[in-house]
Image 1: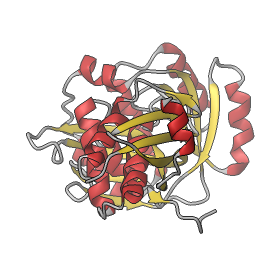
Image 2: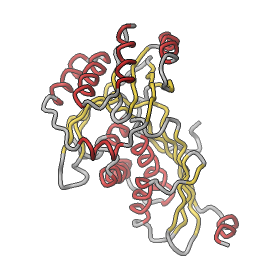
Image 3: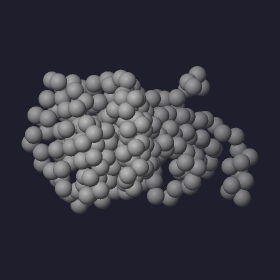
Length: 311
């Protein structure tokens, strides 16, 4: 009966938004009692293959929702649930909300999908509900969701801006401070071995103290070299001692062939940044390892609402 009502009832409003995915190279946690000030310093790069979220609103007698990821209903999308509840609190009316996350990257491999899902959802639902929140206000809700659910620290801040994002001050968009380097004419080659869920990683590693984090960021800002970002990220990932032998073997093989690389935080995933004409070499190397090779452009613009005029 409930499903029949949904099918007959017209859609009141829709919203659609996009967020890039993001690979963290290195970071240092910033703790604060304020959830919007809690976050991380560090650096990472946004990739264009990310998450597109579409929401549909239906009239209902109480607030409820259904979340789908790539067409499959999900009951475990805790970050999305947090965002929905936070935004529905701000509405005077009650709705049934249908959410579909179209995720164009593997989930659980250190590519920031929880953050990009939260960010694109917050943009889309704010628009559908006509709440009038600014992009920064919407992004702050996504950041709160990540911190509350322990699925990320600085991912939303980085995905908000895109590019090679250096986080100079921790916190949500509007609080955290960044410098962004736009990287053109390059591809990110990502070798996905096995997933690690960020919440488990953060809880098992605990607070990470990295007094050299600011020095590392300053080096990248001075040289503006991708190689330095990759090398510093590699050194940092090795210091955490979570990278397995297969990932290390691949990074050694890449180095032997002249490519700088690192492990994505957080996942058993290796990434490097190459030119278009070097992708075939990536494919050849990938065939020697039990990994899925995934290639994406770099996203330099960050998250955004998708309008009917966008293609």
